[in-house]
Length: 110
Length: 114
Image (cartoon, rainbow over all chains, first blue to last red; front, side, top):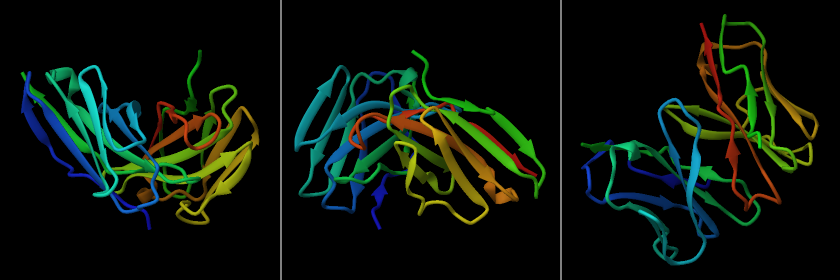
């Protein structure tokens, strides 16, 4: 059974700091990796996708992938109170739908 | 451009009643997904369709759950009879050109069974 594991948190960081969110997955055949953000009472929205080993940067967000270690991370630089949300890691194999982790709750303290 | 539209947004029903959740995917999307989200289990895939055809319903918890997609612009998820443990947020999502593309979620249907 494909599994995606995340620390549930809450992860508390001060405003302006770097928030680091981590995710591990069980299926070595996984090919696509996504980070979704979900505000309380709202639906998940895609913020980053990554497909190959290494780093991918988009504004204040950096996704990191290490397929050998089956590890994905999301770094949020200069964290803002508006970044406070639950971050869901999602992993996809070749022809299978996304499997989501349970999410990490991030709290950015002003 | 309209996103995924779900109805009702909120539903409170008594145990044993039938519940029907509705979804209109984004026009042109060929995949439709039904997810359920709870604190305990997170976001679980219940069933997904490709071109209106159910592909995998292994996530449907019991025979009380059924889903249909009679055409490309409409899908339903039905629970009959409903039970308190069915209380959750049910999300419909759609995507284009296969499973590799971005999944867009609806706002969700918040179901409470008392």
